[in-house]
Length: 146
Image (cartoon, rainbow, N blue to C red; front, side, top):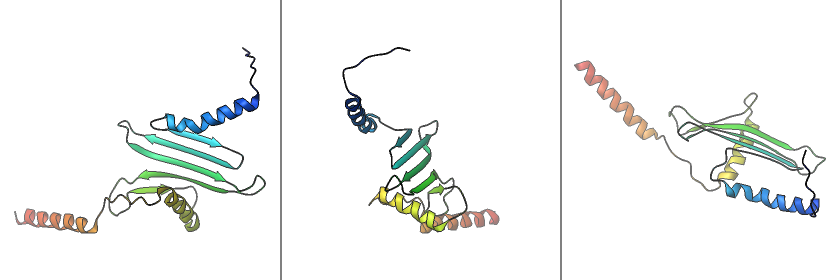
């Protein structure tokens, strides 16, 4: 194993590499995975992309505690696009275990904090859906009449 001797202290290397760690995300166009750990926080994000570069799934795992000797909060879930449009909901969020209203609300509150004032992307309108149904019924009736 090769060895290099240096005149810099371990504290100087720590400070320089901590600065580098904080700059890393700004150096990348798109991040596929990030795993960050500190004494009181662990964050894992994984972005899965399809062949054409479209986002397919996002995995989020977050653990945070206030003090080293306290219990912390844990959030772990995935976000995926819905395959069908039958409501204004265009993504689905999955988490392990049975359906839990309190946990669901905690996930949604955390995500809302990240999204801030961003408006939801609308892909469904009951009015437009009704028009499609009416149009299909009209087409079907015309087909039946021959």
